[in-house]
Length: 138
Ligand SMILES: Nc1nc2c([nH]c(=O)n2[C@@H]2O[C@H](COP(=O)(O)OP(=O)(O)OP(=O)(O)O)[C@@H](O)[C@H]2O)c(=O)[nH]1
Image 1 (cartoon, rainbow, N blue to C red):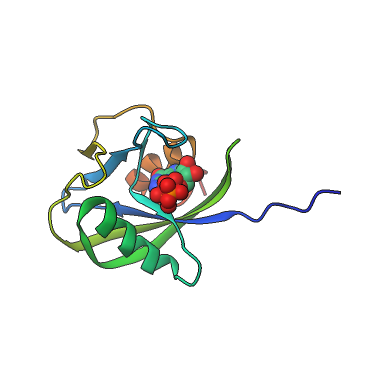
Image 2 (cartoon, protein in one colour; image 1 turned 90 degrees about the horizontal axis):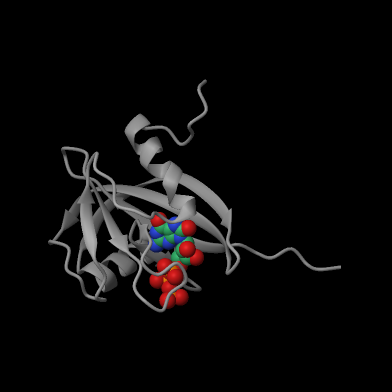
């Protein structure tokens, strides 16, 4: 009998400008799904809260200080390389301009799409435009 695999917690941030544009980053070479677009973030380290992980990842990857963020949707996804539990936050309140500190490309995204997106991230763009954590009509 195999024990169920515990999902890996991942903190993911959606920086949102007043006009609704959101920041996407491209996964660098050497990582699973290199070249795919995602919202910035990363795995929660032991002893860290999800919000602490979010702030650390934004500082490490983009040099941005997240001043406040609201926990939003949660998504679980089983990849061939990992079972992840994504904790999405929306932040409209940060200090600094994004810099490519880990060599990754990034883009502010409105209606025009960058591709490909990570599979678990695809529904999020639609959820953002509907401001709801689901695409199922009530
Ligand atoms: N950051 C981020 N990760 C996502 C998104 N969607 C999604 O499925 N993931 C998955 O969540 C996991 C995040 O891990 P990561 O490799 O980016 O984390 P990390 O920066 O801590 O990596 P490291 O192991 O190199 O330190 C990956 O399995 C990735 O495929 C997303 O929109 N943003």
